[in-house]
Image (cartoon, rainbow over all chains, first blue to last red; front, side, top):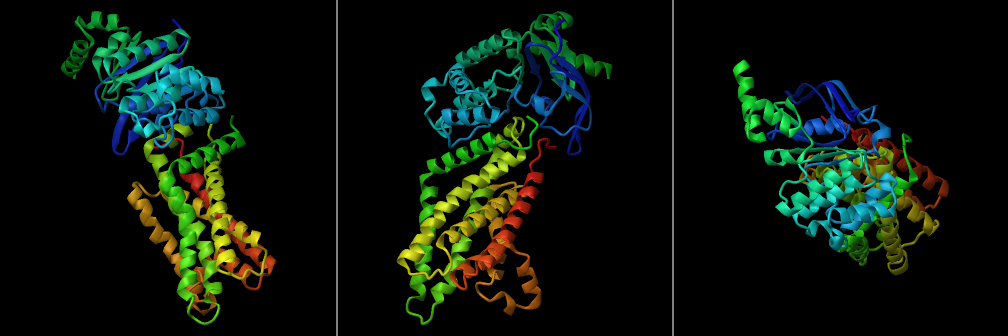
Length: 239
Length: 249
């Protein structure tokens, strides 16, 4: 078993009056890990905890052996939020150049990141004029700058056409082969098969943790969507 | 990487902000041309009246442009950074809060320098504004005013959740300062309470500095007023830094 890159223990997060994460524990190893669950189950909140952007009530979050959010981690984590967090009034290349200067990485990694997400032909275009899918790829390219050890990607494939989605999943696997941990959230269960490992999440809790094969076997389901339903029904019977 | 600020990142922010403004041609033209048009309008308005009214009101207007414009521009742009998620992203990177704030202050300070150079050139060169002190000192005052506007804009943007609200902070924060800065009624002629209020508003000192330069031209007095404005700006920047949170609820 490889050493975990992320360790979360008894994490409690309260937003407003709601306990979004009521005490969650999990680990993320190198490889591609899918964080699957319906909208509103706490995926984004959990991811914000890993990058140190979320106020936490109690519990611990460790990334690469350091407390999440510590200064040493800020060049080692790539984070993509659901909406594209880039400047609409700058070109693709200008966006990437700016973030590379903030991170202190060289010009070459800017060109690499742009071509890896397939935007080399659009690099002189202003981001505001790109399609939604292209904009989110600009945001992804920013996260790839400086080859981070942990990539936290919040629904990076929403709204992309099937060819692009396949290409991106291939990219995630290439990055994982190079030793990074890639945590990808999605509410689309059919993306599950593309992950080494799955974390199924519901109402702020992990209800299953394992490879897609393991989860299907354990539940006797034909696919992950069905497995998810069986797990939820099982929970409700117990309760 | 735990240093509170880095010049590399500060310059990166400033460069980016300037690129954004450069790309927006309409904003750029308005920033540079509108002050020149307004100061000309002021001169023309007083043209047929006796006395040196333009010399009395002109300097105050020169102090106000950079303050008002940079206040507005900054509060809207930083609000946009907060709502688009770029600020959150930057704060997960090795970006110090001061890097962010000083980057903005640097970019808008530079813009204000160009803006004021044009407005001063028009006032002194074309409209015959009599400046008894050194003209370059007018530029210094303008840049400090702009930094004050930027700092206050950054601060109030933390209290706005929409661009609509951010724009409303202009009448709330800026208009009272314009009314009480001593341009309409000399500060010592105001009711006592208002004079006290005026004494704690930064724009009053910005206008003082400009009027001193044009009138008596006691450079010591000018620098004293500039120092007061600079202190207000620094305080607003520090408070603004406190509103930038890496962790949000």
